[in-house]
Image (cartoon, rainbow, N blue to C red; front, side, top):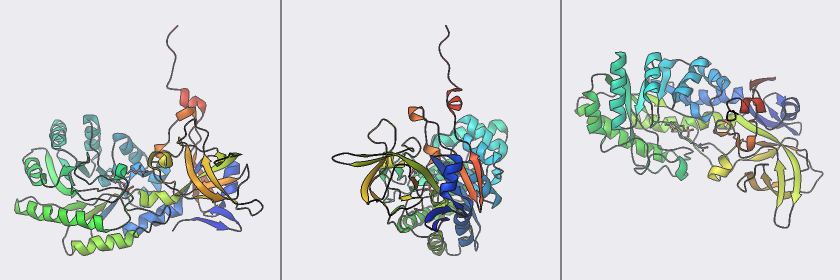
Length: 416
Ligand code: LLP
């Protein structure tokens, strides 16, 4: 459930009409709902309340400082994949002691910074990364807390670009090889083994792949215990899907319950790294129809948002719901392709959408709070949209609209 609903015939973000936000701040614009973010975070935290746990929001899904700050205030942990994300967490008031550091390509300076601020755990993705981390920790005279990200070889049944738990993916360490790699890690002077980690993919719509992965990881944990290696926490990664269209993914509470049943009375601390299921439906992208262009084959509604603002439809053929901000009845319903001004045929946000439209109308692209702004670009020298956060009846600018000066500042011409 989210806080974008129709009231008196128009779309509201919490207590504010979306049309008023568009009037005041222009379009395109990302609009987030604080109450929705909080609700989604709490759904995990409350479901896990009976056992030791940490919900580490995956920063990559939406890394706006205000989003991170809202979650930090609730006591969230964070899953990061770069030193840049780490700095965002720190500036947003996040606790470095609740940060897990994932990613296949951690550089030495990133490891150093993470050790200096005292992150909670490194999710190590390869044998060679272990050597690097051991060396960097040794130079600093500290012990690096680690988990190995194992690849349990389960099919997450999701889009191939966002499926990560199969053997052929670049992520993690083959679960069959994990005992040997753990044994090596145990022998390294500057590492301390804390946990096991896995993340099998994103936008999963059933619990069974998670449970398959969990079963395999539990077998590993038991065999490590026999080797004398004690595992204190189990990080199941992120990946729970959301409703974009007709999908009916399990609620966080159902997902957590299924995990907890399998875990029984094991004393393992459970770490989760949800991104999309916290942020996606806490955001919309508001856009205005510039022109209607009806051709022999298609009706095009040319909107002021484009693939540079929201790339998911172009990149993954992702389907996101697009709804009118002020639904009208006074024009005929037609099938529209909603396309942006960027010079690419792939520049669309939706195709074949039944809508009643006129030029000037406002539309909201739903489920745009995750992997939306963070994946935006300046393609075609377009200024990126602002990010606005609604909190009750207040609207806060949490990232102003970019200007051309912002875009050009790092560039220069050759000397005369
Ligand atoms: N942990 C790790 C190690 C990850 O790689 C990811 C996402 C997450 C957690 C968070 O997963 P989530 O709960 O959001 O599914 N850009 C794509 C999604 C890429 C996901 C990458 N990894 C999209 O727009 O669908």
